[in-house]
Amino acid sequence: MLSLSKNTEILSVLAIAIALNYLPKVGRIFKGFNTMVHESGHALMSLLFSGEVVSVDILHTGEGVATTKSKSWFAKFFVSIAGYPFSSIIAFVLAYLIYTSHYNYVLYITICFSVINLIFWVRNPYGIVWLIITNAFLFSIFYFHLNVAQYYTALFISAFIFTDAWISSWHILYLSIKEPKKAGDAKNLQSFALLPAFFWGLFFWLQASYLALLSVNLFYPLPFLVTGNW
Image (cartoon, rainbow, N blue to C red; front, side, top):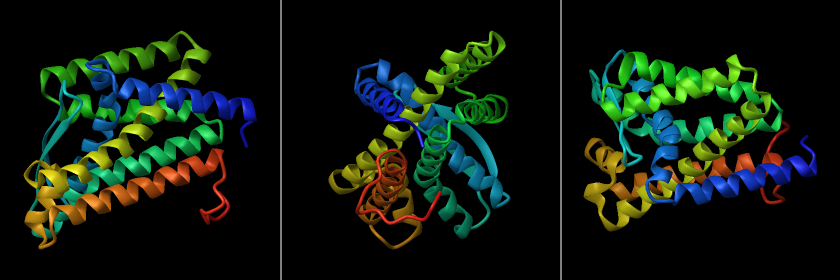
């Protein structure tokens, strides 16, 4: 269990991450962490079903695109549904690692995602530059044994993924109601299944909200949330 001072520090980092998320241009840079995880979810699910990952784009807008090839309707369905839940699960895993003071593991996971994307999947110029800078920074703080930088970098990366995993799920729910044709994964799922984009937007938001609550519950136990012992 983290001390009260540590919990307050983490809450402060989370607040800064939320503020940065809404800053023009700057926020788009930090959204890249969740975009990388989200698109990796699509890519890994495609590989799980013996499909092919054509490319992953991490865009300057903070958004991303995973282009994959799948052999069946069943595979296409799971590839399309994978992105948001994968981001939410990774956000919870990182929160748990912070909770148990395994900060370096947060950085190891980030490095694994960024290296795999850089070597195998990402080919658009912005995405390549973003990944190179991210990897250079992460490797440098390990190489120079910058322990304080490692700690705060782990906190901020976890906070960026946590906040954007939920915010993006809310955004897709909003689009599925107001502009279904622009609702990304929810629109794709509507074409595979006979349920409307709103259903999938709601599903993405509900699972993101539940996993976000589980993450918060680690640091600030919620009386209404029933969980087992972690």
